[in-house]
Amino acid sequence: ELAFQEFLETSARKARRSQWLWRIGSECEEMRDQGWYPFFVTLTVDPSRCPNMERFWKEGAAFRRYIRRVARVSARAAGLPDAIKRGVSCHQFVRHVGVIEHGASGSHHHMHLLLWFRAIPESWKVCPNRSIRDPRSKVLQECPQLETYWPHSLAGLSPARYFRHEGDPWSRLGF
Image 1 (cartoon, helix red, strand yellow):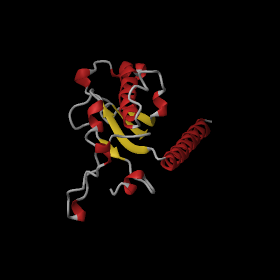
Image 2 (cartoon, rainbow, N blue to C red):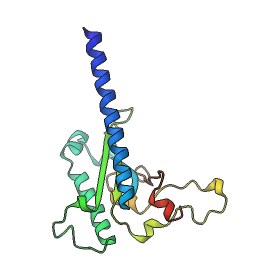
Image 3 (cartoon, helix red, strand yellow):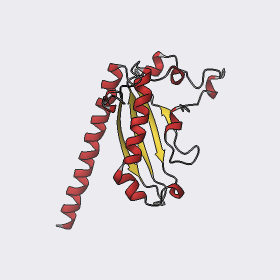
Image 4 (cartoon, helix red, strand yellow):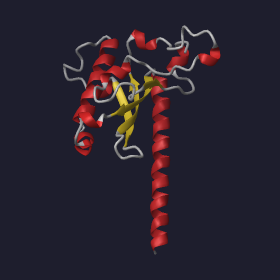
């Protein structure tokens, strides 16, 4: 009976994972087709700045502020600088999906996040490898401007990478 119950739980986890992978893949295709800009972001939390990590993530206020900040950036880039202030949903400018992890030690709390932006500032559209001549050295993937919007991390521990996939907008921009 215990072996059967474990089998069912394992099967359910695999099915959920498979469903999420399909949903995220479908979202990537839909956002690509609509011209949204994808990023893969890791939001880490410095334990010295946040004594109660569980409450930090459960309440979600810091994360909601982050989404609101980056939505304002996207709204400005779309030519609607006060849209968020006027009450337009952040969802109109930024879409996201993510997972919270606590690291192997249990104290390295972070979130992996896919973000899609309706519009982005022109400075974000510049390939970070543009001035590197040797193709083997073109390994830079990060958008340093986007990394500045999460204040809860130690420097360098919350990278924001251009999310590359087939047909992505970065290819059209010459990345």
